Amino acid sequence: MRKITREKVMKLLYTVDVYRQIAKEEEIQTFLHTEVGIELLEQQKAFLLNKKDDLPYFNETFNGVILHLPEIDNKINEYTKKTWSIQQFGFVERSLLRVGMYELYWSEQEGLYPTVIVASILELSEMFVDEKSTKFIHGILGAALNNIPVKDAIIPKARADKYIPMSEDKAAQNKRRFKALQSKRKAEKVADYIEKVEKKREQDLNKI
Image (tube, rainbow, N blue to C red; front, side, top):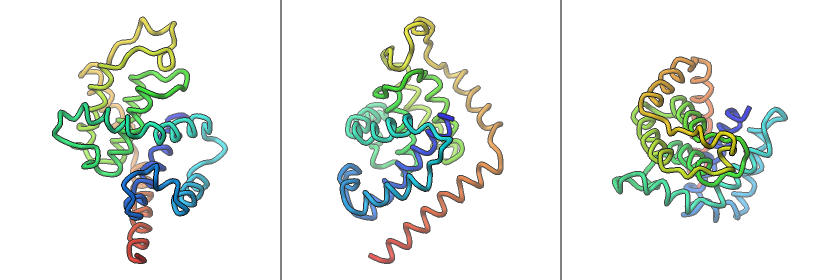
């Protein structure tokens, strides 16, 4: 359930970021305080969420990303080796990295294991972006994973001594497993969602 809800957090961040650009706002936080931003947020939540979703996790994660966005983006930039800025990434890549980095460093949700967080983001990456972008996301989150402090909020005390950063072999194994799990139905569903958002964006741009 949490994996599905994480995907919806990413989708909402993606949509908000797209419309933030349409509205010519530099910051997502500023956009979400506008009339258009508030209405968009309500509409998208109604569209994305249902009773089966983990709503406390969704709200804490989405609101947490928005609250800590400057720090999250700075943290991502630390791991790009100064060759890229977060603002140069695509909308989907930005959203995936922001969710992953927030959960690694700031989330207060219980039972979030760093390796599981990264593996889940990589799975979403396999669904939403190409292999090159997935490798880039993996490199950033993998580096962050190896430097993350062991926190009770992320790793329960009983398991803290068993925490081992994801090795390259394990990461490669996870990627192969996730790729094998991908289905044509999932890919079509994702493509359809992005196509709808892009069409809506084009319509709104034509109105400007």
